[in-house]
Amino acid sequence: RIAPRRLRSTRSAREAEAATVSDDVVKQELTLSNVPAPLANLGLKYLEHDALRARFKSYDVNGDGRIDTTEARQMLVDAGVCESGDADCDKFLARSAAAVVAEMDSDGDGEVTWDEFKAAVDRDAEPVDARVRPIA
Image 1 (tube, rainbow, N blue to C red):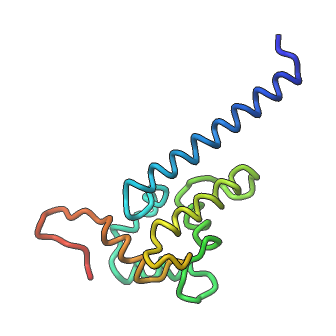
Image 2 (image 1 turned 90 degrees about the horizontal axis):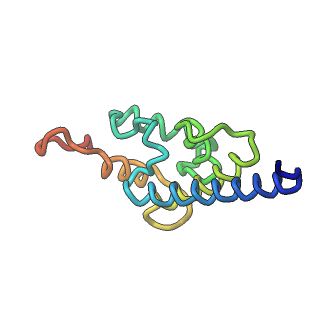
C-alpha cells in the first residue's frame, strides 16, 4: 500500500513526465512537415485556394491579416489536439501555438501572414503525380 503523500508525488512525477513527452512529441512533429503535424487533422493541404483563404480568415479573428499565437491556439483546438479549459491543456496549447507560429513564420516577426500560411500549406502538399502541383 502506498501512503497518500507518496501517491501524490508519484502522480506529479508522472504528470511532469507526460508533459515533457508531449512537448518532445510536438517539437519532433513540427520538424517533419512544413504544416505542423498537430494541424494535419485540419486538412488544409487539400483545400482549394478560396477555401484555404476563407479558413485563414476564420482563424484571423481580429482581421489584421496575421495569425498570432492566440489565434493559433484555436487552430490547435479545431485540430483536436486537446480541449481548451483544462489547465494542463491550456499550458500545452500555449506552447504548441507558439511552436506552430514559429514553424510557419518565415520572416520571424512572430505572426503568420496569408502568404506564409499558404506557402507552408503548398510546401506540405504532396502531389498525387509528379505533373500535379498545388494551385497557385
